[in-house]
Length: 475
Image 1 (tube, one colour):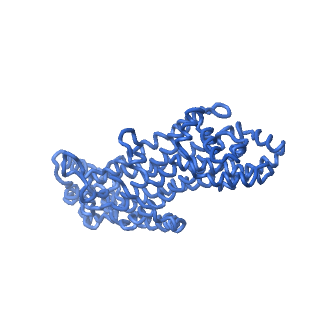
Image 2 (tube, rainbow, N blue to C red):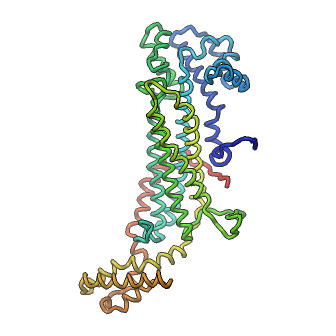
Image 3 (tube, rainbow, N blue to C red):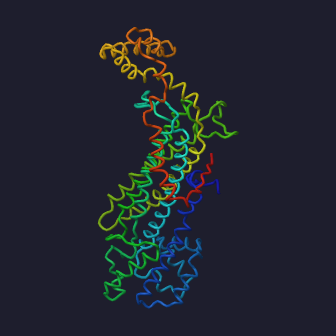
């Protein structure tokens, strides 16, 4: 790595080597050459005058790329695809006349992007599965650990730590369904021609429409695709980029939500993300244990969500059959979106498998709010004891307001239960039996069990062979 020029931190710091390698120039340009080979093979099979020796020459030099020479060509030609055509042709003098035969630049650029996106979505799918699995384990472990719930970020009816983890996991399950759908429906552009009319290929095959259609199918099949887009202009529909970016943006939002929850929980000292033995939390405040991984997840998610609209704007401005203002922005947005999502999920996996839970703190903070949570049960118990519901409700409201003032204005503990116990209207209520936190979590533990059995376990079974995804994080 050189330190004299800017390095993209998505590559140098955050994303996995696998994802960074997938979007490398070398991978892309090797794909271009593979596409030229496949095109020539298919054309030969359909009767064009392409010799076996020419095909053999092309195959022999797919991975031999002289980048300096190609850079020289591009400086001269001002065209990246033609620079690579010439670079390939220099190595294959016999095959020179049939390289890129009948094709437009988007034959290599767009088809390669579709291959890369499908593979990248596969990487994302595997990381999603890994995080879902870990969150499922965590949820099972803490299925019945009661904790304070929050709505509007205000204390609300208790839930369990495990149930809350299921909420995080379910967002990712929904993301996984979208990723699977996109992988399944990602098609190939193949040999659609300069404006999508296949005119050049029709000319090559002397007006034989049947052979033009066969060429399109054959090239797609050789590249591992079972179908092609029904119609295109010069490019595959940029709507496809919008669909893929929406999926990635959704994953970013899921990660941001969970990471924000964890940051808030760490603030409450209920749950902490991993903190390594020699890790420094602050250069000034030596005692700090900042949730830096969750914070980084949020930062990267914000970046990824910000890229989402770019794909829609690009689609919206593709005049007629194509406008080249899609090229530069797609070179930035597509790789960086996948790199950012890869980094988020890598962090998510690392954080989830190292979460530290503090049950005593959770119980203490729940107990401080539980008197308020128990008021409905106390009201019902008072009514069962013969009290007037409306009178009891007013007494509970009055005592609750007074207890809240003591907590907020004097910093003292919540004395609501003491106040109610001294009120003759509640003389027949057994307050001790009403304050078991497990009485207030509803079906949360059972919901965790059902979620694991019905949702998480089938995912684990389906992707059992992909369970070794690693999540090393450069902190």
